[in-house]
Length: 337
Image 1 (cartoon, one colour):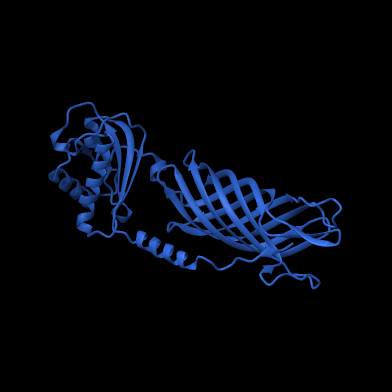
Image 2: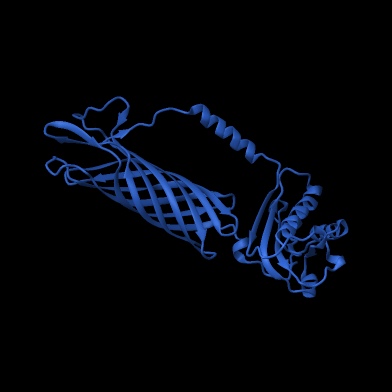
């Protein structure tokens, strides 16, 4: 078995990508996220959007909930953040046909604005409509907020949750051996590459409030090799990997979340003639759709490299190392706790 080492290329492109990413992350533009349940209504004027913020407001009417909106300001003066964010939230509501915006007027992390977009068939109540005076009143309420529920409504837990905490992933799918596997046929050295097998993976992680954490991976794979039966090598091999990992991720909207992980650990190779232990590294990216607040389904793409002690009688080219390189795609269940 053998692994072709990665070659250095496109380094300038990588630097450019890093610079662009840093510029994007440092952008001053607010992040607006809208999750609509229906698009059945025509847009309305922003001055027709009524802003509700407490139990007294919501007692006046019971709007039909048609969506949610969230605004996260970026690098703006604190005194301007609320006014700007409220304006963006109202605009999103109006463009999607909402004439009611129920604001969670608590002081949220990062001066975030979060609201429920609603639709009411009644006439606009001028005292609740979007005006500078109404925004000023709501801003004062926010500043004077005490530890009570200001909305009078329970917002869906899925929209509030960041899904930080424990994550259990159980996945399975195809895996390809991207490194060359050498064998002898008719006294000649030959190789195969891109052999496909199957893999089962289990990982347990914990992501903290800051969006990163640690965990562990355990996976098992079996691959059938397209090698002539008269070769000296068995036509199947198994691979086991176990090790800790670093993970970072979080929610993307209301029902989507993602994470990336990097791990290192023990690699074990086995076929009919040989068993070897070595060192492995795994990188993975996961995208998940939430079925409920605690249960989801996800797809994970991963690469794995492993290195083993080379026997003394094995000669390899200078750009190759003794080990394996795998590429896999897995589908599975996600459980949050």
